[in-house]
Every structure is written in C-alpha cells, then in structure tokens.
Length: 241
Image 1 (cartoon, rainbow, N blue to C red):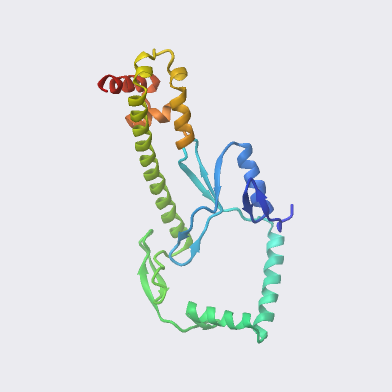
Image 2 (cartoon, rainbow, N blue to C red; image 1 turned 180 degrees about the vertical axis):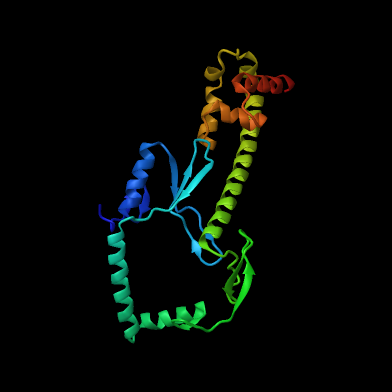
C-alpha cells in the first residue's frame, strides 16, 4: 500500500492510504465516522485528531489517530528529514531564517541553549508538577496524554449536551405534531402505532437522524418505555387540545 496516497473518499479528503483503508473498514462495519471535525488545545500544541467514531445514537465512542507501523519506512523518512534539515541549517535561505525564528519563539536561541526562563506549574489533569516556559501561557498539561484525556472528557460532555438539546427538540416536535394531527393520534390503536405514526417518524429521521422508537421514547421519558407508552403520552396531549 502506498503511504503517499491522498485523495477524496465520499467527498472527504484523506491524507494517506492508511486512512483510506481505515474508513473502508469502518464503512464495512457500518460504524459512523467523521474526519478532522474538531481541534483541541492540548496546552502545549493544537491537535486535530483524524477520526471521530459514533454509535447509532450519534454518541461519541472514541477518537482515533491513524499512524503507520512500518518502522523501516519511518526510519527512512526520519533519515531523509534529518539530512534535509542539516542542509537547511547550513544554507543562507529563507527557510533557515524561519527555523531560527521558530527556535526563538519556543525559547531556544540554539540547540540546547535555553533563552526564555521556565517555571513550575501544576498539570490540570494529573495534578503533578511540570516545567514550562514562562511565555507559554496556554501550556496547562504536563504531557500529550494528559491533554488528550482532558479533551476527550470535554468532547464527551459536549456530546452529552448536544444529545440533551436534541432530545428537547424531538419532544417539542412530537408535541407540535400531536396537536396538528390529534384525530390521527386519538384514533390510532396500540397495534397500529408504527403504521399510523410513519409520517412523524419520517420527519424525525430527516430532521434529527433518529428512527429508533427506543431513542424517541427516551427523548420523552428519559428512559425507554416502549412505543405503547409513547402513544399513550401523545393521546394524553391530543385529548387536552
């Protein structure tokens, strides 16, 4: 497989053959995914993960970063990068000036020589002490692992918040639909729920991406009570209109 491949898959631009193979695998398993949809501030750098995986209810399952395990290819790439970097340092080019400026901004005037003083901080995640440049005010985590765990928690909380907001919208949609179609609701027997409520289910699926009665029931009762309880809830609303 060619590591250098990059191109579009279902309208999404992927940067390598490994990513392409991975999304084909996800689609084969019917796992919902999104690519590079969110950026995280890890405290010491900005990080944009490759893949966000979701369950059937659109809840975030995990965040995945795709990397090559071809150690020989990695070693060759590092060697080429090192040789190229040495040539840049030996040159009098614009790239050389940018590299020097980058070192200055990071606190190093040259390799191994610290220019900007450092201070001791407490990691927001593990609460351990770590050393950081005084100028790097955004560095609040001691390592990438701690920053990653913190941002996964943030993403999970945001996903939960989005789910609650969506549930409220579904509940209001059902109430409005019931008021506008109260005769259908009142006349619907408990053995014809799916048939008679098909237009409502289609609207919910189109607008909110949900077609499972269990999730719709959870949006109303905060737990799955089944379609009969859902219909009774709608009948109670219709009878009050």
